[in-house]
Image 1 (cartoon, rainbow, N blue to C red):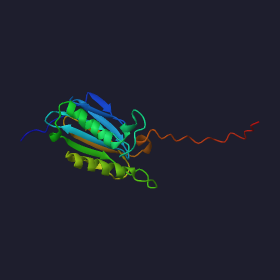
Image 2: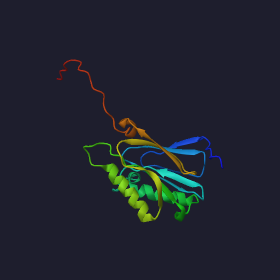
Image 3: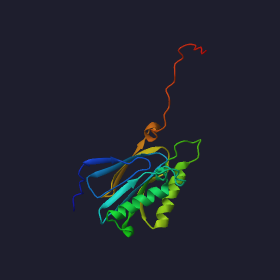
Image 4: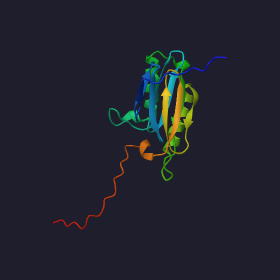
Length: 182
């Protein structure tokens, strides 16, 4: 019987934020992200030992500025695939895990569902193996991905502010008395 492989602790954590992606062939790199309705594709070529992660906000849309397209799924998927290929991966060996697409608010349109549907359709259309992950559901999640080994971990996020830190909720202002303007 063979002993289970023990992974060395990551020597470098790299956080992947909205509209970003990272690719590496370093087995000590751990990629992390926090997702709500956004989706992240974790992609690798197991033979070449190269992989990466992206994080997109919306499935489709118009890019109005230089970096505006980065938040959309089609751009995020293509740039991650292309950078994995440039680093030595082969398209026919790529395998992907998809995370995110959570339903964050009951009263609003379900952007998470649209993101998850887009990501699955994209992999199917591109012929890339979808080998795991966790899509849809309620709430956010923290994802850790070791791109060289393909190992991934997910933990639920209970605090909505941790998922969407760009949303600023002002603190209530105490009434300090009447104010008269002239």
